[in-house]
Length: 180
Image (cartoon, rainbow, N blue to C red; front, top):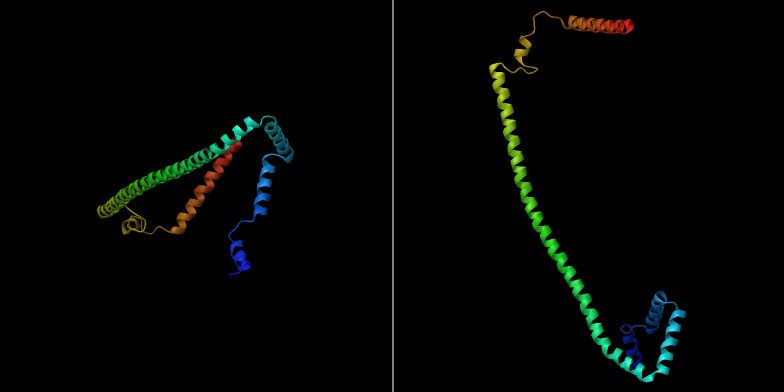
């Protein structure tokens, strides 16, 4: 196996360090401008040069504290994400329980409303049929309502009388307005 083949097979797996460094530097530029970072580097270098024992002590402390700090930050983020997911899951569970209760409440109220409507419709039809049978209720198109009409009354004369009455009422209203 040649080195060219090995190198080509690993290029897909290894990250491009130049892109990583440019990403890190551009992110740092967003956090702090390069001039401010340069002032901080100069101050740290001057401190290390002037107090080497203290700076080495602080460096070793930071090195050993880095792993526990990283673990603490990882645990905190994980705990927050886990508890958020758990809270979301519990919340969704109770929403689903309430949805099931709502569904059955709506089924029961629909059944009661439909039964009430059927009962009232039955009562209406029964009262109407009993009323028709006994003669207490007359509906348009009934034989009884046709038979109560006086025989020989002309529909044209009814219309003429209605027009005459309406003309008189208009005249009387107009004359009443004029008198005021």
